[in-house]
Amino acid sequence: MNYPNSSILPFIALSLLLLSSWLPCRATSHSSSLVDNFLRCLSNRSAPLLESVYTRTNPSFESVLQARIRNRRFLTYQTPKPVAIVAPKHVSHVQATVVCAKDNGLQIRIRSGGHDFEGLSYTSNITFLVLDMFNLQSIKVDVNNEVAYVQAGVTLGELYYKIAYESGVHAFPAGICTTLGVGGHFTGGGYGNMMRKYGLSVDNVLDVEVVDITGNILNRTTMGEDLFWAIRGGGGESFAVIVAWKIKLVRVPEKVTVFNVPFTLEQGATDVAFKWQQVAPKLDENLFIRLQSSVVNGSILINFIGFFLEESDKLIPLMNQTFPELNLTKTDCIETSWIESVLYWAGFPTGTSVVALLNTTHGTQYYTKIKSDYVKTVISKQDLDTVWKLLIDLANSTSASVSMNWNPYGGKMSQIPESDTPFPHRSGNLFLIQYVVYWTEEGSNVTNHNIDRVRYMHYQMSPFVSKMPREAFLNYRDNDIGSTASDRTNIGDALIYGPKYFKDNFQRLMMVKAKVDPDNFFKNEQSIPPMIK
Ligand SMILES: Cc1cc2nc3c(=O)[nH]c(=O)nc-3n(C[C@H](O)[C@H](O)[C@H](O)COP(=O)(O)OP(=O)(O)OC[C@H]3O[C@@H](n4cnc5c(N)ncnc54)[C@H](O)[C@@H]3O)c2cc1C
Ligand SMILES: *[C@@H]1O[C@H](CO)[C@@H](O)[C@H](O)[C@H]1NC(C)=O
Ligand SMILES: *[C@@H]1O[C@H](CO)[C@@H](O)[C@H](O)[C@H]1NC(C)=O
Ligand SMILES: *[C@@H]1O[C@H](CO)[C@@H](O)[C@H](O)[C@H]1NC(C)=O
Ligand SMILES: *[C@@H]1O[C@H](CO)[C@@H](O)[C@H](O)[C@H]1NC(C)=O
Ligand SMILES: *[C@@H]1O[C@H](CO)[C@@H](O)[C@H](O)[C@H]1NC(C)=O
Ligand SMILES: *[C@@H]1O[C@H](CO)[C@@H](O)[C@H](O)[C@H]1NC(C)=O
Ligand SMILES: *[C@@H]1O[C@H](CO)[C@@H](O)[C@H](O)[C@H]1NC(C)=O
Ligand SMILES: *[C@@H]1O[C@H](CO)[C@@H](O)[C@H](O)[C@H]1NC(C)=O
Ligand SMILES: *[C@@H]1O[C@H](CO)[C@@H](O)[C@H](O)[C@H]1NC(C)=O
Image (tube, rainbow, N blue to C red; front, side, top):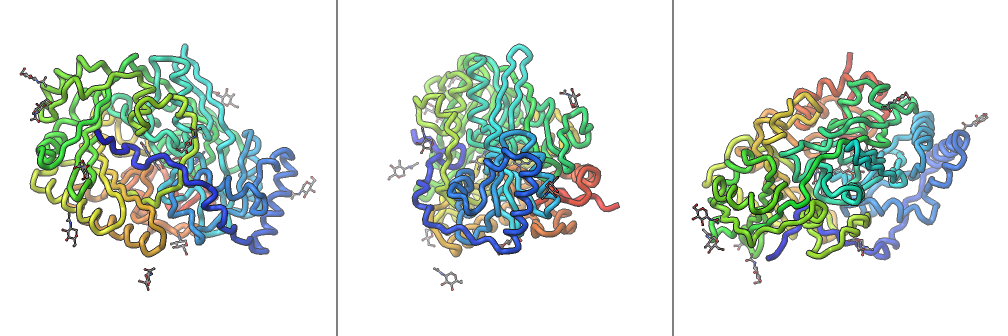
């Protein structure tokens, strides 16, 4: 069985050697005096911090910058680079960086895992520095109280490994790809295959430690419920630097079940997909079945990839009753520990040791463009045929690999009110669509062409997806849905992307922003503008 990579991109590192011939841009005299002042300010506040600062002349600058660039679209000669990277080893370094950047008029971009689909954590069109969290690596798991403390630079793989090391019956609901950083991933929502049972990562956050615009360290009590609400799905980059999360662990059985059942069109994929839309969002909340549609040999291949929080003996009769079209049999099922199911879902080869989760290296092998949609009404069989044709056309008109992941909602996701967190896509959604296009061919023409084609598919999908607003998922960052230049705040553009990502919660986000960062220091092309009074 050909296991298509469920986490969209295989984890193969591109040798940094290939990239080392790229020359760093020269800093302008304007920015170098800015940087000098910034560095002087840092050394005044916290002398040992200078060891964690990489300016462009530092021999490690390029490798540190590239280590957490995931998308080759933002690893080109033209991509603007920071004047410096600051990699704090202590919260006081974060405080000093915020204060000194603000005092010197330097924009900061905050980076944890570097997976932002538009590269907003490490690029900007104006002079900027990267506040890179990778040195903040602490994880403390307290099994007795079923909580954990995890710093922003930790990856999901490291967190999952540590939880499983401490307990065979605990887990945390978060993303599939194990190199995601908990800093950016949680603050944008964070979903994975336990979302129908336990909700999003942010639904399981108990407390947080941030550094605010004045350089103060705040926690839930001292920041108040408004800011605590905003950073659980609204994107921390608009509000403060997240230093660490306190999270609630969830319970998992000693054995879970996973499966991956492929169907071609000849084998009746369309009928099964039609039924999937009706049952997957309503099934037992212990069961999550992703539909992955890809183009293989010029035709559609659909994989139904499952995760069940019980043993397979319970799954077979359940499926026979509710979703017999899938024809799931015992031989399709793999029973495994939760931590091994993580490896399976992330696409590691069978037999890979869990130690692989501690490998935080990820490649920058692919150029990618991602878009998202929400579906609220079942797509008819006839329209499914149209959708498959659009996907085939997309594959046929580009040099890219293309696929769609359909992720079922329902269960716990429907029980949480829309205003509980900034993430608004709760009850009423059948599934989230992720459009994935990735390629290796170089050149801006290829890039522009492939991006145009996926935009066209997204446009053609309009009849089948949410409307007014056409919703989108913040963690699937997409600058096409409205973005501003990084040196200004255009409330007009924000009024386009804001309601798509946040629906009615956008208003409250702008109010919180006006309160905690009225001068809009924490910003990027899709940040929350302060509410104008
Ligand atoms: C291969 C791949 C698989 C993915 N799979 C999933 C998935 O299964 N589920 C899911 O929900 N999403 C998924 N995503 C999307 C992912 O959740 C987002 O890209 C997320 O923002 C990544 O967080 P990061 O820390 O790795 O990225 P970064 O690029 O470091 O950060 C993303 C954003 O958060 C901000 N930010 C980062 N750290 C901080 C901080 N400490 N304080 C304040 N702001 C901060 C950044 O400035 C940026 O705007 C996937 C992405 C990729 C590339
Ligand atoms: C870590 O992962 C990268 C990317 O997949 C791989 O190239 C490298 O060999 C891995 N390192 C180890 C020690 O497994
Ligand atoms: C550093 O501290 C000294 C002494 O407190 C002060 O005079 C100077 O202005 C400071 N420099 C910067 C760049 O903050
Ligand atoms: C929050 O911070 C305050 C002030 O530093 C501290 O007194 C309090 O104990 C902290 N709360 C928690 C839950 O850590
Ligand atoms: C695609 O074609 C290759 C080579 O002909 C074949 O081995 C493979 O099984 C095909 N895959 C599907 C899903 O048809
Ligand atoms: C791809 O496009 C070519 C040229 O337009 C066409 O001949 C071919 O049939 C297409 N293939 C598919 C699978 O649609
Ligand atoms: C499903 O149930 C029917 C009737 O109870 C039975 O005949 C059939 O073998 C079952 N199929 C599977 C795959 O278990
Ligand atoms: C269901 O699976 C069984 C066993 O693999 C197979 O014999 C049968 O043809 C399948 N039925 C359908 C409808 O695919
Ligand atoms: C890229 O596109 C431009 C404008 O369409 C064209 O002039 C140029 O020849 C193209 N370059 C390549 C390498 O295809
Ligand atoms: C940044 O600059 C690039 C290259 O000039 C341009 O394509 C892009 O649109 C700019 N982005 C913003 C947000 O202004």
